[in-house]
Amino acid sequence: MAEEIAIPGWKKWLEGIGDQVGFFINFFRNIFTGGFEWSEFVRQCYEIGYRSMMLVGITSFIMGVVLIVQLRPTLVAFGAASMLPKTLAVSFIREIGPVIIAIICAGKIASSIGAELGSMKVTEQLDAMEVSGANPQQYLVVTRILATTIMVPILSVIGDVIGLFGGFLALNLRDNMSFSLYFTKVVASIDFSDFLPAFIKTIFFGFAIGFVGCFKGFSSNKGTESVGIAANSAVVTASLWIFVIDAIAVQVTSLLFYK
Amino acid sequence: MEVVRTNNDQKETAKSKNEAVISIKGLKKSFGEKEVLKDINLELKRGENIVVLGRSGTGKSVTIQCIVGLLKQDAGSLTVFGDEVADMDDKQLKDLRIKIGFLFQSGALYDSMTVRENLEFPLTRVLKLTDKAEIDKRVEAALDGVGLLESIDKLPSDLSGGMRKRAGLARTIIVNPEIILYDEPTTGLDPITSREISDLILSIQKKYKTSSIIITHDMECARIAADRMMIMDNGEFIAEGTFESLHKSNNKIVTSFFKDIL
Image (cartoon, rainbow over all chains, first blue to last red; front, top):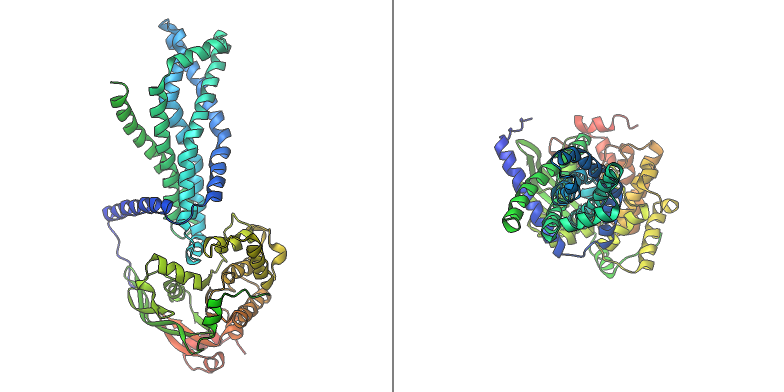
């Protein structure tokens, strides 16, 4: 039997890009053609959103506490201890909250989607769906990507609130700061231009997490090992995309809001 | 089991029994430099069961994947109900797939859904049925037909290998396909369950008047279900005939399949 010709690395890379572009186009085409899978979409919102809430909440709370504990000595040394609520609020809402929560979601959600769809491919469930005349992209991909696009921003807002609450508890324990004072300082320090750009970028983070998870699952090979590879690759790629999107978002935001 | 058939099905079954529902001529398919299908020629008549035998890796599964358009051939002609599969657009391919049932080796049940939801899936997504009573009736009838009604609300992970195959078969027949393609339906099953599945394949052919291509290594399944058998080796068919005629063959490859048959 003839040996298979080895495809050069650059050609594989280009093919990979082409496959992703095709997957991206198919996703948008499938949103607007055929019926929308509402029940699966709601189920995915529950799985992705509700089931990630505990993890996001705990992580955000700890981040809020840790940031206050780390920031406090420096700000106290400069006689700026009163700036702690503002520093925490601005840094958490603009950058730390959205990015950390998106990275956590990439670890939990992208890997789970990649592994689920990868195992469906290995066990021929995707083929079974396709040969039955149903559209697996419509049922599995559109619902998951839209669910992550909607739920990651919501998780991010919830995480911001919990993170700020964690910061309050840390300040209250150290400096006995009252909630009303902390709350007033936080609200006074943040405005529309802090929240909106951060919220918009979480929509892109959510899309990237869902898209990468689905693409890696769909494009996995038909072997059990490929399920692990799909899950692992989904986390790594989604995390990378989150930083790339964040870098772009920071540039765009600074041009538009912080001239 | 109550057979639910549409007017179209009745019209189709009234057609000539000699009509070829699948016609393959000179089919070739390669993966890279590896030529998997060299020259496949096959004609499946209406109401006929063809069993395809062959060693692993000879191209049996690739052939049936080409029939449903999961793979595209490199050369040759493959027509189903007179239409060339390679020339079909997405809509035509979807319409064709509704007429072809495909039973995968593993059953390929959707593991996040119960057996009931697995069977409802093609009814609601493909046939676009909305009447709950009609859906329930068809699901229960299909499961009753394969003897799995008591497992209707179980998850696939709670089913044995044989039960998964039965559930997969019920999901395949629930849309009343005219052709069923079986990919190693008895692989991994004990001899008793294998025989039950083989009997089920035969009863489905008789009850639903389906035409089938059955890929198997199981000679007992072939003996029970085959109207005609085709032996595949190295990407082409090397022998064809009834079970009895092939049993008497002097061809070395053919006799190797029958060596354990008395």
